[in-house]
Length: 153
Image (tube, rainbow, N blue to C red):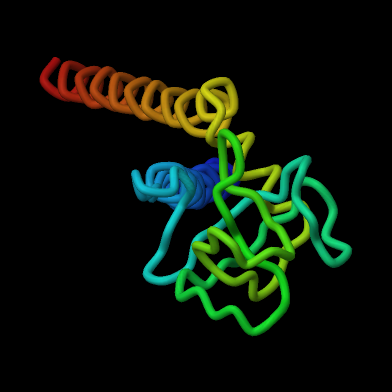
């Protein structure tokens, strides 16, 4: 019986972790400001470094933290170029100043924003969790129904 309780506890902890991750991913995906089409939290935009961006060593797929108060005091700037936002050395068209980079995280966020990634990382695990709990409830109802019948007989 102790083994079953341990497994149930692990499943419950994993369920909570999954819900927290799914919520975080969903907020990250949908926290886009229509003006920039990139996630914006307060005064900071999270911009994925893509091809065509000029950076100081950050690779493609890194996450640039952009301060949306554009201060043209040198450094790298987020600007609108072509079909999206890019990082350049030119302050012309500046929408923000790059404050730092987080390696790889931009690529991960872009994967989550893709419909396939969102389905695999958020929708599918949550659906599996809901099905698991439905099965648990059904088994619990059957088990308690069997106890009631055997107790009355």
